[in-house]
Image 1 (cartoon, rainbow, N blue to C red):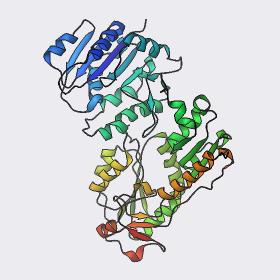
Image 2 (image 1 turned 120 degrees about the horizontal axis):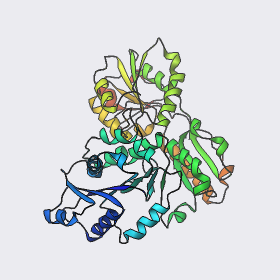
Image 3 (image 1 turned 135 degrees about the vertical axis):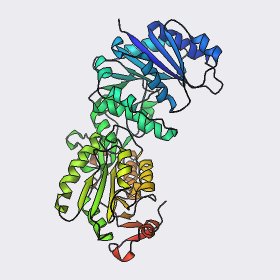
Image 4 (image 1 turned 90 degrees about the vertical axis):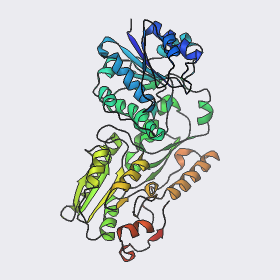
Length: 431
């Protein structure tokens, strides 16, 4: 018999426990040990919940559900006493707990380590944390599991909690080699993908190419906003087309040296996810000819907090190149633009990038990928598919950097002369 434990994260403004949640907790207690963690619970409700298999804990209201999960896992103590752990929160409404649990746990395949009720693809593919079950001992014993909870910091911004912790947890387990899946597919999913799928970015492209035959084998698909080197061209089907980009890192760094000719050091911000590690090797290879001209300081082995500290101490005649920061070296997930804006507020030197999506007031500018141009090309391809053209017959040349564009306010901030800009540059005020 599987020894199960459940950690329930609860919040209610009035300190109440809904009837359906009490019923769910009671059923979970029949399956194993339950730790109920609340940030706002009346004494009467706490007393009503107590049962031989239920432990009730209250804690300060900080860190959202993930800090409740962490507190509950701490209360469980030695996890070797259990075989499986499920975390869930009180936002989930279940009117028939026995049927739900039977269907959920019976959907578990032999090769699945982490099972959720549903998955989500915002930020990156991940299992949603309102109900997430770690179903194998190797997942619970993994070096990716305990450090994730141990190193967690309270975050008051919900928009940061989702990418850093909900997405970050799935990414940490996935990077460690575990198989993640969801038990249920929304009934409207087929309608959503009937006309076509647009996969945006390298992680999405990797996901849909990996699971294409299993999830939507015949659906027309566009892989876009992905660098050509991240496409598995041998796996493309007659229903696939690619709207790729082509990076040119030497051009981006030559831009920095032209705009700031006295530059002696360029610090490079890059994360530690599999996609970011791939680009680390590519950048090192492409930028090798710069040796002797400028010092390249790589930030891939630092946590984001360490990056902020080091960036604030860079010597004069330095610059920062922002590549990617999805997951830092400490395993913490970040929402890229929020992290970039935080770096911009503390850095003492100008920041450059290669992608127009980061040109929002924090970077100086230069030759970059144009989000507008790529969106136009992708939309034109989508219209051709909707008009009946076979996706595989549509061939699009990868797009390079657009003409240089610079933020006038950043130029004023760092004292950059307009005469230093490349020919054909355009000045604007980034927002």
